[in-house]
Length: 251
Image 1 (cartoon, one colour):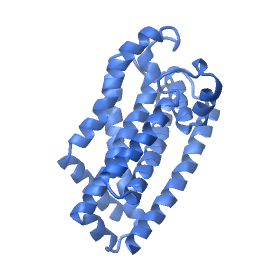
Image 2 (tube, rainbow, N blue to C red):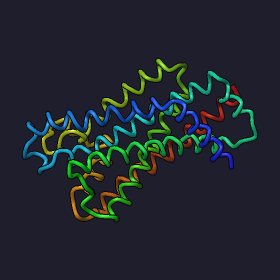
Image 3 (tube, one colour):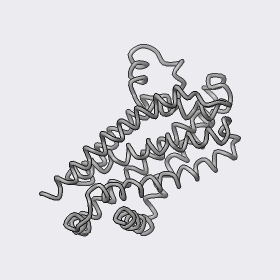
Image 4 (spheres, rainbow, N blue to C red):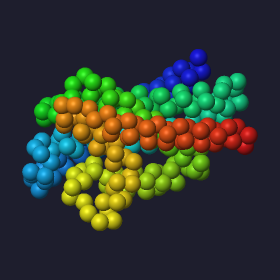
């Protein structure tokens, strides 16, 4: 199966370049351990208790951002060694190429998420809504990883080199992360900044995951709303990226 072949090829590249996994999870761990200690002293009483529990959903999204960035770099490397173009001229469906690449990135994202969740468990951070909540969180994180991996792959097809890629990624990721409720509760935000935060779709993803973790129930209305938004965005970016990949074959 072509998807499996592309998936295995990318996994092989990851194994040969373990630094991409190490670096993409090192930054979130530093945020989790060091920023939490500094922030919880000033945020005491604002988040309802354990600040690690509050910040963890945002850090999980940051892990996915980091993993997706390394996914784009792998595409530039395959372009340089020629394997990207050899795949394009092979009788493989463009959708299989794209899905194989995205699924590999998602798998790495979940590996890193698992490590981060294991570390956070030592700080009494759990999913209070139980197995049902864990399943819902996995689905929401899958949609997030699919979307960000799709954006990263699209950018790697559109931009001429790694320098331009990193510039655009950093320009996108930092505002998305900081103009959200990843680090601070929504109730502390006012005015135009609050409006910007609410317009950020990742705010709703972070809030949905956070509420599932902190509460003993799942608010299905919120989950369906957030999941629906991200499902639509995933479909859009998949179709746009697939069209770009087909265009790369012609050029």
